[in-house]
Image (cartoon, rainbow, N blue to C red; front, side, top):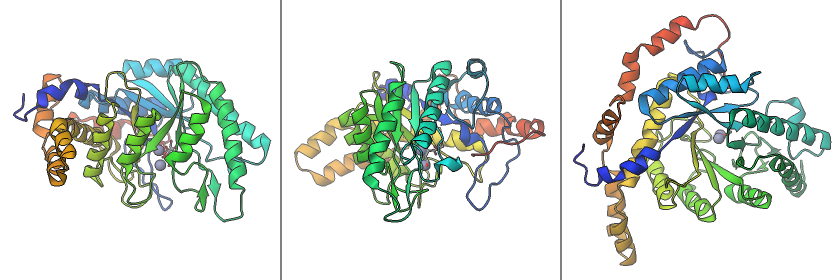
Length: 390
Ligand code: AOS
Ligand code: ZN
Ligand code: ZN
């Protein structure tokens, strides 16, 4: 299959890699300056799912689609689930939204007014109803809450109210369901954010119970943060629930994962593997959280899952015995060389062969370009309203 030593041995773990794609990645998105419309953009959640299914069909890597409520609101989630199944994918994580309602200007789950908190809690309970209907396991919560000026808010009071609100949501979960709390160091609030870092998310979810976990979005850290250390620590503590993969040059750029810093993605995947998150019994969810502002969305998603697969394969090739020997011997540069050898391995030809063996196109990007799907949706999806990120 390949002349890369050890490649055949990594196949079982590689086989397990599944990356959930976000429904919002298929809609138009942009910055606060401009949202560019792209021909062929879906006009319904059904069309988003059809597009996501193309990503899975060509890569074998993306079997599920994350929903966002209320953007993906429908009357009948069982029917939506059947629609997904008929396209060869399933519905995944349900993402809540407390960032687009005027009532939440000064907070949602942390708001000083109990009525506003109740409304925000009720929204999450509705998300759990959706999960019941679709069979989703995870409720992912990202909160746009915080303050812009010192003195604007009581930091401690907000943290206490957050704990109470999260407990009310957690209580509603079924036995197989999980709450996953995402952290982000800033934006839209600029002075303080109520869940700014993994430590706060960890403290909050630990207080809830065993089915509450942390979501690590790779774009949500200050520049220079050692993200793989956080991955290691959360896995060590048994609280890494999920990843939101993307990449960033400056802030929360939501660019294609692995585009800005492939080496960082490799280092993250090395800790994922070291911490058992690719083992057969792992419950860690791998998701994309990206927006494709100027590139075509479907190939943007294909490129993304391929990038994760490539860095996973390289990280699986890491010679752990040689690494451990070098580390124990205090061989600084020897250990680094073992690490870099794995990172520098070009796994693309081996992965192309691996795909062919599984009946997948060896070059999914090329296969998409040649499939005619892009032209087809550009021609057929006229009329109606294209969906956008919000
Ligand atoms: C926001 O910055 C977060 O990354 C969220 O995970 C996500 O992008 C948003 O909630 C859309 O679902
Ligand atoms: Zn995210
Ligand atoms: Zn984000």
